[in-house]
Length: 409
Image 1 (spheres, one colour):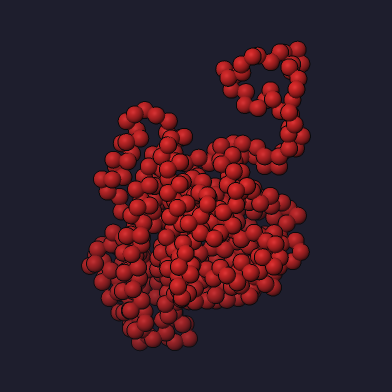
Image 2 (cartoon, rainbow, N blue to C red; image 1 turned 90 degrees about the vertical axis):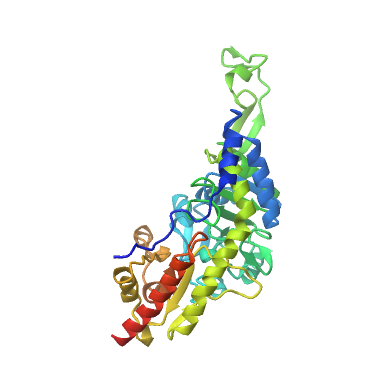
C-alpha cells in the first residue's frame, strides 16, 4: 500500500533562522522566562494585527482563561458561544459555573450565526464567544452590533486565525479580546505551545500581564504597621521575596493568576515565525484554491464560503457534501482511508452534545444546522505549507475518484 497521507504534525516550516533565534537566547545564559524577546514579540504581534496590546502566554487556552477572568464572569452570568467551538474555548466557563448557551452556525462558513445569537440574549448575558473556524473570519459586524446594543463583550477564539482578515483588517485589530494559538499544528508555531492575548482595552491588558505571573486582583489597603505580631518589618525585605506581604492588607480577592508565561526561546522563534506568516498563509491559500477548483467540479459538493473583503488563513481546509445527491459522508471518509490511504480529520464535535454538556441538560436538536452539517455534510482535507505538489495532486485525484465510485454504488 502506498504511503499514508495525513495531517502534518507541525503546521509551519522551520528553517535555520529559528535555530539561530534559539541559539541567540540560550548562549548568553540569560533568563529563559522574562527575556527581552518576549517584549519584542508582543510589540511586533500587536503591530502586525493592528491592536493596542498583545500579551504573550503559554497557550491559547491560557488566553481564553484569562479572558474570562478580566471580564469577571461568574455563576450569575450567561455567555453565548457557537456550538462547533473547540472544547478549550468553554472549559473554563464550565469550571466557573457560568451559564452557557449554544448558538447555531452558518452551514457554509461554519461560523457563528448572528440570528441565532439574537434569540439567545437575555438580561444576564455578559459575553459572546466567537471562533473563526479553520481561519475563516466570522461575520463580526452584526455580532458587534448585538454586543453594543446589549453592552456585551465579544471574545474571539482566534486560535486558527493568525493572519486572517475581516474586511481588510487583521483579526484582532478591532477586538475586545482575541486569543491566538501557536501550538504545533497552527500556521505559526512557538516550539510546540504558545498563545497571545490581544486587546484594545488597557485594563484588560494590564490584568492579563499580572494574571500570567500569579498575581491576584481585588481590593487591598496600605498597611501602615511596622510589625506582624511580634515581628518587626526589616528595613529591606528584598532578601525575603515578600512581595506586597508587608505593605498591604487584602480585603477582597476577585481573581487569582497562575503561571501562564511564554518562555524567551518561544518568543524568539515566534518573532521569526511572524515574519514568515503571510508567506506561509499564501502557500496554504494556493493549496486551497486547487482544492476548491476540484470541489466546484463535483456535483453535490460545495466549498467553504468566505465573506467579501475577508482573508481565510486556511488553517483547515473544509468542504461539504450534499447527502441527498448520492454520496454518504461517512462512506466517503472510509473510502478515502481504505482505498487511497488518505486520513481525514473533521473538526469540531458539537460542544452541546459532549458528555459533560449533556450532563448539564443540553440535548440533540438545540442547534439543528450544526448537527446536520456535522453528522452528514462536513469534510476536510490535509493542508500545510510544506506539502509537495505530488501529494496535493494525489489528494485531488482521490477525491474525484472516490466521488465517482460512490455515486455509482
